[in-house]
Length: 288
Image (cartoon, rainbow, N blue to C red):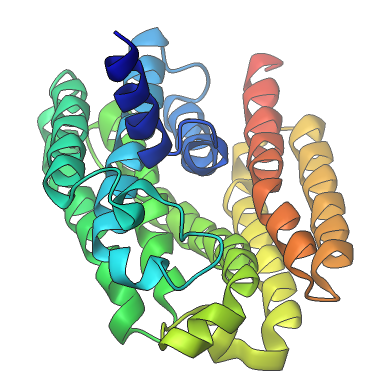
């Protein structure tokens, strides 16, 4: 029993179970899209499908990412202790676990409709491509932005059986948010990444990293606020937008000196920004 418990602990470490910020960053824009597509509460079935699906796919992504990066991770202080890198989990085990988790997520998608099922294959493809983008693309965070935003068109597809222009506009806006917080994340490892030849937005942007992150945040908030303006969400939505902008200002104070601790803290707290936008949307529909 003790052996099984230790093995389970290693697998939970592999999927970052004790670090929920990753799947929360995926969840809030997805739930926001569900509420917008449904013009309010979308029903418990879709909320459950997309919440569980988000956790499962993020966990599967961790498995494939750690396999792809295992040779690089051993040279980066923050990632040197990951289970695949240390050998606590074999490559075969990690890939098998990732496949099982992705399959479980697909089973959930099967309970929606054909349009959502079709888009799920594109979402899976982007998830598998991202870990390798860091070797060839100077801004791999843009690829991650697509992967972390795919819940938006899938949410619209699940509610409306189509993906309207609004979904793609919101996805574009969300991509800029991902660029902002994942560049903060990349700033933590910049010295190690430079040494091992990894490509990241923090390296590509150089000394423009902080102003670029601020610009990414502002573009994200602006696109969502303007795209949703015609939906007359009311004062609560714009209060949420104001609170979100306040968080952006706070993040500037955390990253302006480019300290590892400050940048990592800013990244970890980003899910509150996403929650703020979601809460503004959900409350606005509830008060209509």
